[in-house]
Amino acid sequence: MTLPLIMHINYCEQGQSLDEACRKAVDWGFDGIEFRCRNMRQEEPSEQYLDRIEQAVRQSGLKQVVFGGPGISLMNPDAGARATEVEWLCDFYRLAADRFPLTVCNAIGGILRNRVGSIPLNQYALHGSFAAGPEHWSWAAEGFRAIAETVSSRGFRIAFETHMLYLHDMPAATLKLIEAIGSPAVGVNLDYGNLVYFEPHDSLEDTIDLVRDRLYYVHLKNSIAFPGGTRFPTALAEGEINHRQFLQRLKAVGYAGPICIEAPRPGDREWYAQQDVAYIRAVMRDVGI
Image (cartoon, rainbow, N blue to C red):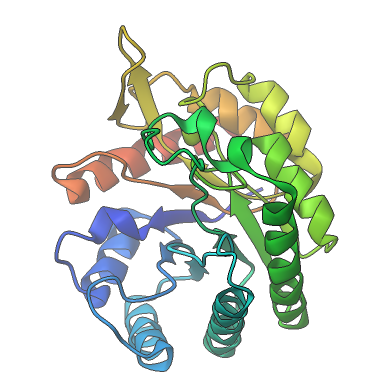
């Protein structure tokens, strides 16, 4: 089997245009790009933003489009504000589905900080799902039920990224949210590169086995730990996560979705993209996916 290889747009957010990003992604050997769900440089209507992406995708020959962060915030106690966020994302997905044959999009539900405001954000085990009350689960489930109806009606799915500071930070918490939403259109985007920032964290194999039935999308990145618990991002091939083992396990459980690689480190990200895609393509060939 051949799985689509997606470039996260953060490889080309150092001044590159959408046209450049699409053309370079194709030249480097990617099948698609995960774009932001809004223009991060300036305010722009969704229709205009999507039209520019559509033109760049068509001219470059890019095969697949995914949309991701910055997502929406459903951790706001103001019901009206939450409803506005949900309405905006539903409208965006409708407009995007009119332009692209979407299969899955990366979902993010808003940062949830500990009520003790002095706790640093990098103490991840004190924020997100660890700081959630019943109301936070209810707000997120209610909002994403409406979003799930929209995406399901358009024939694609969404997947919550396992990401620190969000309600869907850990695999078990993400599954809890998915169960509360109650829609087959909602699953997990497994970013194990985020999970290693939590101590303790489950092994790669146990994590994949836990989420395998709702695993719709995968993000890959890498890092290495230094004494004192500090982590530094690395190239895909140079950190502690064995992506050969990762892909072998995905194949074993029958994963059939896209694989997205990210650029978590500063510097010349265009060069990093070429290094990372060469590595992961080689591993995909070796593993047989």
